[in-house]
Length: 425
Image 1: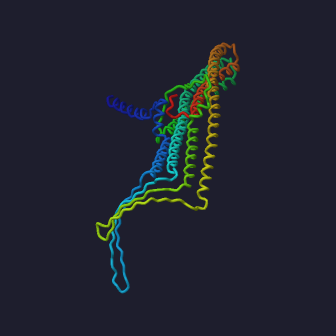
Image 2: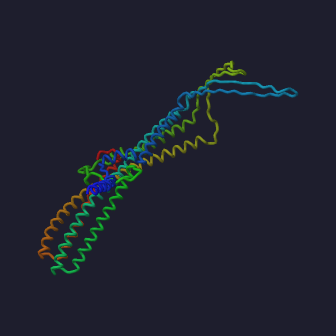
Image 3: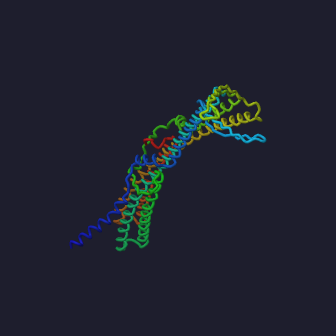
């Protein structure tokens, strides 16, 4: 007996290990946000774009500072005259040289300002990506939450169908109900079991989608903690134009327009001469270390006289780019305002639909209780009762769908405002 008991304990322990290791991880909405902000690859791409634009500005700015170079050289020259042996001459040199841009018609300054606007554009692009990723994450979160609740609803419906089948079976055996009613109840029970199995399969799909958005490389079962309820207020319509002004896509378009404006000014500056100071100090000689010292300093002025219309074409191109960005800014702003109005109306209507579905569910639940009692005593026919039962089942699913649709409409509204991943609601 002792050996069997020990073996049984070991067996139970071994069976318990895989169950505990496959337990679902419980995550809140804030947990999902933190992991997504750290691991989502699209967000990392957007962040690196900012780093690249910042480095590009530093590259552009470097031209405004003195440029200093060091040089050193060593060589040997062989010279052979006619009817003479060749002679070798050594040469050594080292020194430093430097240059400083004094004037270029403010071209470099405008290029630096354009690079600064490119940084703003990249930052707003990051905000836009963050807003879209928030929408994706919120959608995946709600889908998983709905899948979890859908299993509960499917279990409730299965219980309703099971109780109905038991009641109809009793009445059928007692000769109070026809065979068609029994077969219909059995079919409804089969459908309810299928819907439950489908809800369980959909749960894993929703888990995989959430894993993907959070940037996980390996799938892990996840269970989310939350409720299908909205947090945004909608009593009064907001100022859509004011919201549009702060939208990342509008600010990005504005930064691109400003960058094109500075680029145009920099291109026009090509018509001005470029003035720079160049200096140098070096030592040369045939022996090491060389002893001949040389110093130089010169003011260099350069200005192209003829380039086949190059500068004129560059200005024309820059002007076209500016006009293009101005039109794009106007189009982007109009599109954002329209999208805000549409998402606001959809959000408001979705919330109102939840209240209607809730009242319908309450009414159908009450009707179902009354109808079941009436059917069991013969006061209601099967045809009338089954219609009421079907309405109850439909109401349960409709209410769950309405709740999920309202939260998704809220997420669309938040996205239309351009709110980022860290947005509180």
